[in-house]
Image 1 (cartoon, one colour):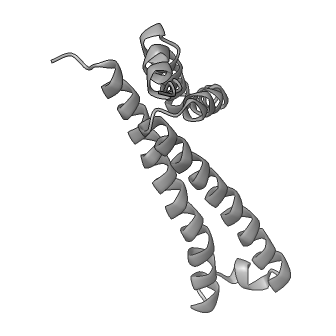
Image 2 (cartoon, rainbow, N blue to C red):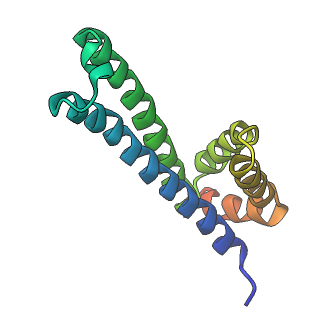
Length: 134
């Protein structure tokens, strides 16, 4: 069975949903794991760090990861709904993924390949063309 253009776009959307979920889990882990290690006395190194430094560093890391999660989830939704901004954003993010060898290179290349095809462009155009007034 051959995948349709719509199936390919949904596959790219699923990749972004998966990436968004993974980044969300990493954001939670960035806060919970180090704080639990300090609270349980399992990390002498973390316990020696000043509280303001540890707290602000963890919040910055968690905020960056949460931002990446939100961006990926939004792009996944935009692609799933065939929104032009979802296609454009996914292509921009794919370009930034390419230097992360090997997974980012493969994923970014496949995303660009799928979203830059003429059939995919027409699919998004058909879904977003204005409805004529009657």
